[in-house]
Length: 212
Image 1 (cartoon, rainbow, N blue to C red):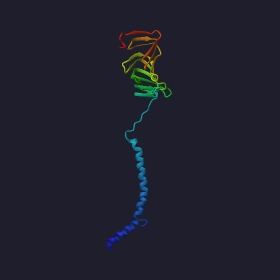
Image 2 (cartoon, one colour):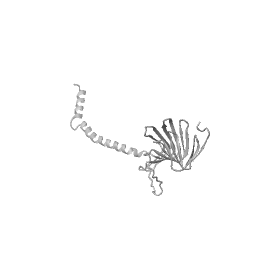
Image 3 (cartoon, one colour):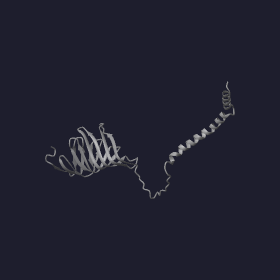
Image 4 (cartoon, rainbow, N blue to C red):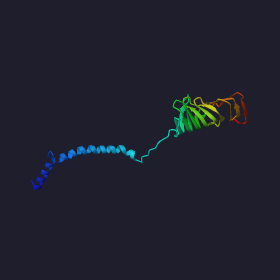
């Protein structure tokens, strides 16, 4: 064996001998690696908190605006089915539900689409109160009902039952339909059959040829 090979062998034996350089390196790594892992974990934990400058402020509860509304939604859509399985949708430009206990939602910019036997129909109103449990809409102000066959009924201040496809007023109403103009103390309308019942001081001005 050459002298160089002997020196290399002795060097390796010294490295591997007890108390040699290998043991020293292992002892250092046993201390350094856990410490390095701890530093890394601490860095990862605090990094999300240091993405921007720290800001602190105080709020005066007497000056901060608060709200009691549970839900406010822009461009809301509600879906359902009537007792015959026919679908309907109710779109609103905005919807506000006051509390979880109250199933009534105040809506603005209402547009309801309902399926009738003769084709789709549509209800449009500016404001209403939608009861999600009863599937009813109490319309505040004007409402327009239009069907696929061109039938139109325009009135105001009624309750629309999306399940039964009916309209019913709580008080006096006036409006128009293909037959002419009308007014009465109470209105009951079946959207499916196009039947309108007027009771109490009913007045109807018939337009000649309006049904043609």
